[in-house]
Image 1 (tube, rainbow, N blue to C red):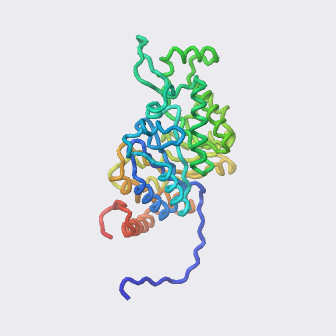
Image 2 (cartoon, rainbow, N blue to C red):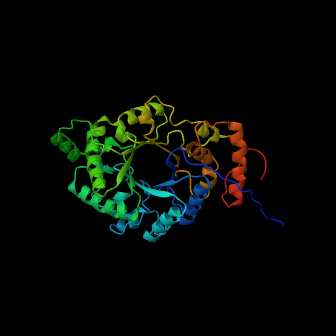
Length: 372
């Protein structure tokens, strides 16, 4: 009859090459409705992704509604309607779980925290002008006991709200100039014998934060700067996962991190917010994550990868077409055998798959000319 499907009996033997196959969404630069996030989870399931890295807060806004510190979202969100209530968060986690997807939250610090300071007094560092006048705020102030009391409380809550074993702690792009401009921080540096090496101050902060996370029985993920700052490598708890995002010579970075014995998530070649005209899925598809010089033991430390869609220029109007089907190419690279590489064959399958997604209500953009 019209519209009926017939299915041949088949047995399929298939399993993923890498255990971590992630998508990053950013809900601070632009708020994404729960409906939009759920739709993204459906599309992820259609593409064999199993981790949603939820970069939930940042400088621009703090949409996570904390029960312990309600002022964080009251004052730090774009508006009272641009928040994720405990119920919203629970719904996203449960919807994902039913589709075999884990939710890993990221609360990035000590940088990327401007919105945190609106609802939490004395958390951020005051930045001083050369004339010693206060001009704005910078990263979290790592010298105060109150900072760590706050972090213990907020992460105790977060670790209960998000069941996953991993919590992403960020640690990228810290503005040392603000720390260096502040007389109280300068004194603290002298007392600690840190000289003028602000990576040591960041290490001091990250070590305390990681100990808090470890005491909550969670495993930290951090951006690569935390590994790159040599002062910090010594303080990394074994098993800490390093996420590689810088596009320069990332294979060398993979070699160094795995040689030091740390597990890795690769994102550098898969920053989907960088767009170019044409079929950029091809360059995502041809990446080989294990293409660095290292032992078998080192290569086993590559957990997988993540396609990142940062939100400066992305909201619900363009999230879906910008993610799909470009991320689909990353999905296959992380799932399928390394020797499946034929671009012509991949193109034919991807155009069919893109039409399949469109039929399912996912507005995946076209790969090239043609029709569904």
